[in-house]
Length: 199
Ligand SMILES: Cc1cc2nc3c(=O)[nH]c(=O)nc-3n(C[C@H](O)[C@H](O)[C@H](O)COP(=O)(O)O)c2cc1C
Image 1 (tube, protein in one colour):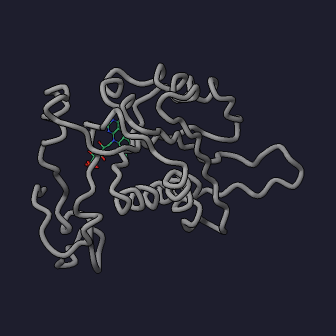
Image 2: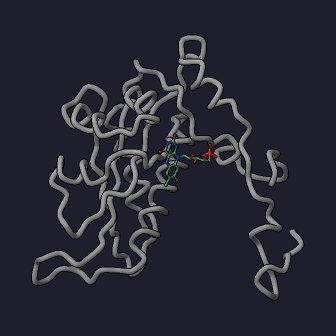
């Protein structure tokens, strides 16, 4: 395990982290929102199946009000301040239509990748994107009429960094914790699974 990010890495990835202190006044404009979703739109997917869906909740709108009541206790302390929350879903079966495209086994992988593209685009725009899964997925699916062949998967809180001096000290402590990662040698192999690639 390491807590040090050493070696070359682009600034947008080096500086990314899942922050919780968000500016409750920041408003995400439609142009930026569309740009984030366009990053997901142009993500690769198996057979170009594009098996992702996003439900947009902007702070202050009705969707947002209906979403926040489904948050887990841990996420209720910071998610409501986000400028927008993008609730993600991936397809888990073919739709009921006669001409429904074939369902791909890689749908969750594809959604995750689209979310990653969106997260990087957010970083390039000076926004923070914090992905989270701590909410009542079934409750959200029912609340928003998500069809059976889609599964609510995660949500992404979008915002800008807030003022730590005005924030809950527990959130400040959480945001300042060192980030920890496995070493490359723990998950990058060569020759035989488990044998270090020497990187
Ligand atoms: C699928 C998924 C679920 C997550 N769920 C939560 C969550 O419910 N609450 C939260 O605060 N962070 C959540 N996170 C953020 C992770 O805790 C975070 O990405 C991880 O600790 C690494 O930190 P970093 O993103 O700052 O590098 C989630 C991230 C992912 C990808």
